[in-house]
Amino acid sequence: MIIIFAIILSEKYVLLRGSNYGIDEEHSDKQKDMLGEYEYAMLCDLEGKKQYKINDKRVILGIRDYFIPYIVDGEGYIVFEEAYMEDWELEYLFEDGVKKEDFISDDYRESINIISINKFAEVVKNGYKVIPFKEIHKTELTSWTRYFGMDEENIFFRVKNFESKVQDIYSINKKTLKKRLVKSIKMNKDKEQHSYYSVWHDIKHMNIYERKIVEDNIKIIKELYNENINITLDNEREGLDGLVDEYVITSFWTEDSNGDNYKDYVKIKNTKAGNIDLYEGLSEIINDNVILFN
Image (tube, rainbow, N blue to C red; front, top):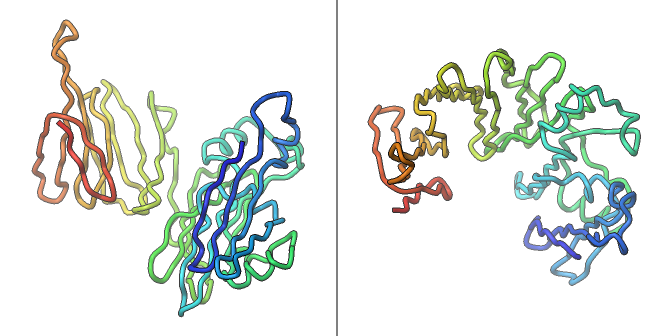
């Protein structure tokens, strides 16, 4: 099986990632799969009409979500989030007492890195096994390091220390690469007091939502980074679908005591004006547009 993902870096370069792992036991090796030996990455030079194998395992295995091109003063750069598991997975392993020596490679790291597209292409074409990224920040098993967004001047990333339960938000100036602490947020402050507690990171809009259920199934949703949203849902059947600017979109369902006459509803609340619009049906949020289906 060959799985290919394409990341467009520029008009000239495209990065391809894939796996040749066979799911049948006869033709696959579990140990090789765990070491990532079935994974591969290639750099395609569209002008030169050539493909170059990428040898750096961090790129082959460490791109989960973010390998993002951007432009500074006319030159292309890449910000690379090196991560190998979800936020909650790494924190769970820490809480479970997993140590570095418990990993196959006796190591684990996450990092935020930057390199120019031209330099990246140059070293890949020359077969480098270790690409000389500019490492902005690195953590191991006691914290995670994750990309958090970008604006015209800065790149943002987030670091959560599992011991202190503090999540720090940093900015990196695109031109100078100067790192600055933007905000520190105490997480999981009263997690054990609730029947449900979760944190959701909305990278597109640079929001961090804390969701918890208190007594009588009342749901509280609070935005922790910008501190611009604090919602209480007192209907146990109501859930948050998303947020678009100042609008909060939730949905719920109703039925009679016999379980008949089932209906879906969408509620759209303007948090600034305070008014609420109610629609029967379902919704889908696409590119900050709310599509309603009846």
